[in-house]
Length: 330
Image (tube, rainbow, N blue to C red; front, side, top):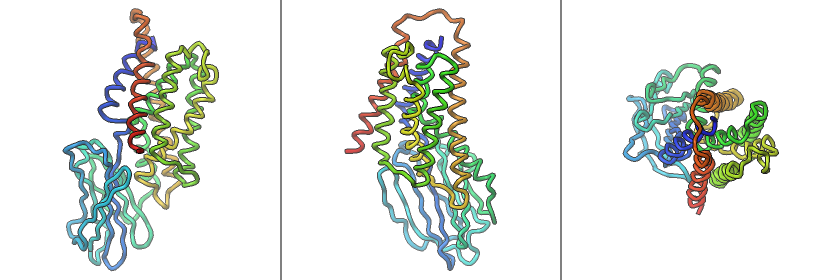
């Protein structure tokens, strides 16, 4: 029954993933840094993968005058605008910064305000709450909630990671073994996410993305060979291989986190809550797959050839991602 549901689930994910790419969540970043004497440096960073026709733009306090015109630059994955504004003797406390167009782009935005005294305030904005009012002080609870949401949304919109997790569910039929396998994957990506986010290790993000796509392809090949019977490497040592690939996927999560950064005064809290958000999203996905699989038990049997759909659907998209990401390196 799990195979029947997974056939439909795989096809649905393939269709949505093809339309939205592997990581549609590309949060914008609006950063304002007080320089003193009323001057503030503003940086606005958006992903190059924004949907066509979407206008995501920053909104600064109305009383702040532009001192320097915006200068446009770009890096491998983002477009960046930098300029300076003069907010006068009032400073930034009590003012509002925002990002418009989030509803249309279906993304979030991180607004980070660095005050002249060294304190920083930040919040994750969405279409329903597109402004941040700079308070006197920001609590740890707000940081926890913001990064929890970021981690949760990232895993649920990261179709490559979801396909890998779906493959693990299909690979391991025993519930206890599945728990061990998913736990090993979680432990693996938690380790490298933390190390990479804290700057202890670093790998080229584009190479990491290609390697992640290849790991999904490898898993699909194992599924097509009947890894359930334990006749392949992943089938015999599923938890070991899941943990190893988890280390690789952790670098991908760290790349997403680097887009928004970590608050200087709450790094452990933000990193922990981002990781918790990822795990909650992953558990929700695995639970949904298992529940729907149970509900599908009364259904009639399906042709044997249709049972191969999950492996070939996952493998086909993995090959597409491998080629797409490899071309991006050239």
